[in-house]
Image 1: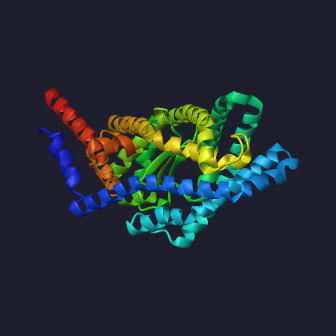
Image 2 (image 1 turned 90 degrees about the vertical axis):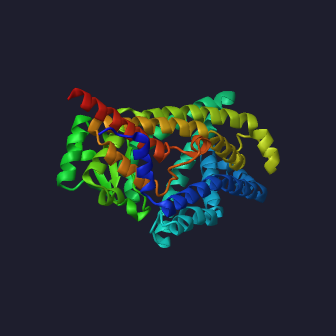
Image 3 (image 1 turned 120 degrees about the horizontal axis):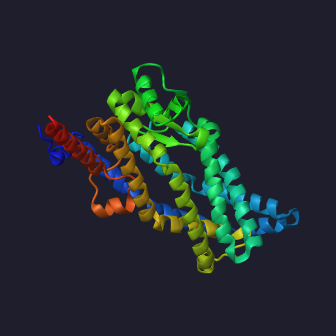
Length: 391
């Protein structure tokens, strides 16, 4: 029987039902608006930190203690105060809104506890990184942005190397995929891709989110593929295989290293532009001092945040290319287009599967589910036709 890819795609998407599709569209569109409102919240927090004079006084008080301690402590205070001032906004966006859309069942106490752990890591690691950036400002002069971009590359690579073993277990419990037919199938797939079966995990992602998800992460010996218990419990064996094939694709195709390279280039570009734009933004916030003074760090962070938001159409486009390649790898590896489509439709519950072309270009870091399912159905149609011709 010939496969009508367009009709099959429509059937998959429509299977969610009109209410679920409307809810996914509302959730997604609201998320786009949060980007703008979040920028305004960040501007307000920056203004408060700059105008309060606290950082100028702290910088002056710490000056006799040496540059390292001065920058580290000022950066720590900036990161800590920023998080505390933004806490009401974070509670709304990351917990209350997620709860209202049934995207999470995490109790508020657990959310706050995990947020505190994340904040502690951000303060320590972020302050160390920023101390390095300011060291380059002092020693490399006008080319500080170039060296700082290199530092960002090293920091991101180290973070990806250490995160699976030392950081992610602070938030979730990672266990080997349990013995059974699922594990047997995944071990076979891992062997084909030269991935150690010891790096196949299932984790309690339902602690934070009800989303159907899996991920590939880490570098070198720390590389691993982890499947959320939400996906593990709600998917069929073929769907698990299709999703795992997608994640293996990220690993085999070197998307992690591509991400490090993109981050390096963007970090250099952002720091370069921040150096040029700093006087304008500093005047707007009423900051006193140059970019190399730790007390003006909130302004630097705000500029980088604005540039990051403006760069999202570019970074999202590269991410969509990676996801498309990983989908194609899954289809080639396990040839389960219907299973992949079924798994993708489950993600459409929290990501509008039918966005407009401009919306997808600007905001989507994954291709629209409708487009991904259509690719799977076109694969199915092509291979069905080839099989028919071979008979």
